[in-house]
Amino acid sequence: MSTSARVGVVVLTYNSASDLPACLDGLFRQRSADVHIIVVDNASIPENRTVMEATFLERAPDGPVIDAAAASPTMIENNRAVFIRSSRNAGYSAGNNIGARLAVGAGCEAVLIVNPDVRIDDPDYIAALWAEMKPIEDCLVGASRVIGLDGRDHHPLRESGYWEELFWIRQFGPRCFRPRPWVEPPVGVEPVEAEKVHGCCVMIRSSFLEAIDFLDESVFLYCEEPILAAQVRAAGGRLMVFPRVQAVHAHIAATKGNSSRRMLLLIKSRLYYLYTYSGYGFIKLMALRVSYGLLALLHHIKARYWAS
Image 1 (cartoon, rainbow, N blue to C red):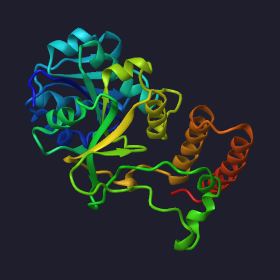
Image 2: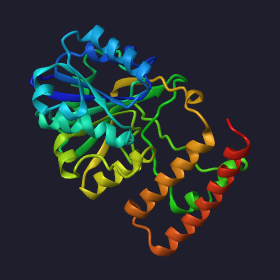
Image 3: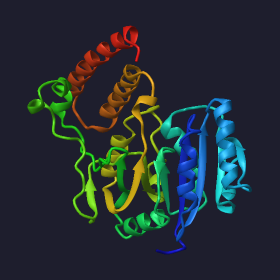
């Protein structure tokens, strides 16, 4: 594990005061790499942001807390950690890009995007993940093994096929008619190639981020994973999971608000992905639009009359 490896770590927060302390504790324990932690707050409510800033300064008393417009790559290069305030919430990819652009500009070889509800206990996590990923030159996106609080793996993920996506209603039928599982857990500790990786904790080569002009900001939330996977394939690269390294995703779905409103946002993002990246022809895209239109109608009704 080379101490010369410079890796930028972007933690995008949004009202994440309860999750941030444990996430930062794991990141500040990292060793064996030149790690630069960039917390980007995506316009949280003032009370929550104040708590997060205090949490950050407890761990990095000299770390600057600054508005995004005033941040610079030199500031990242000269500080182990910075807290950046974004004046508006333009979405998940746009928020992460604030930190990723600064990290790449500061000479980081790779950028690790970490959600604030991710827990990293291994102090050599970042160095070990980059040490496995770096020699595989066509591995443009890499991820460790990621498990949830229930002990289940989050990836490698498979992409849905056309017919199972068109007939999404199968998911609500008898088990024998449902699609096969989306997650195909790794066996053993050898690296495995993935169609997609979970976006909660993912490492991306800086050269690839520059080549694609950073993450696609056209979606506010959801479908970032298939978009990134499509960009990797278009570049002739691979996504890989390295099971020797492990993180925990302490995600609690019940805290995320109205499920139908989230589903409507997901459908919007999915249709953008399909039209922009899937390569499907006109007829297939029209059929998917009709199918998803029906699903959206059902969730409009649910959101209107059965708030959750």
